[in-house]
Length: 118
Image: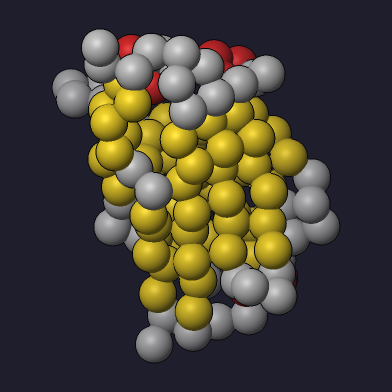
């Protein structure tokens, strides 16, 4: 059974940090590109960070220098380290895995909530 499970969300103060984890199972994780998306209340879902099957990374401008995405293919997980959090980082964070050579295989997790507030 294909699964993507996000964890690590919670409440953090501005300037604080959180680490999100996306754990995969049921498919050949190593050949999938993985992205983290977030959706704030009343806003569209946006891509925050991405890592390809070969390890290339990309970030939305608003998180560059603060967020770091990495992957462990043996453990079948992707980690998003979020530092210097801001209130605008608040939202539901979703993990997406898409096969690197076809869009047919495209999976989503159920999300984890991140709230940045003092």
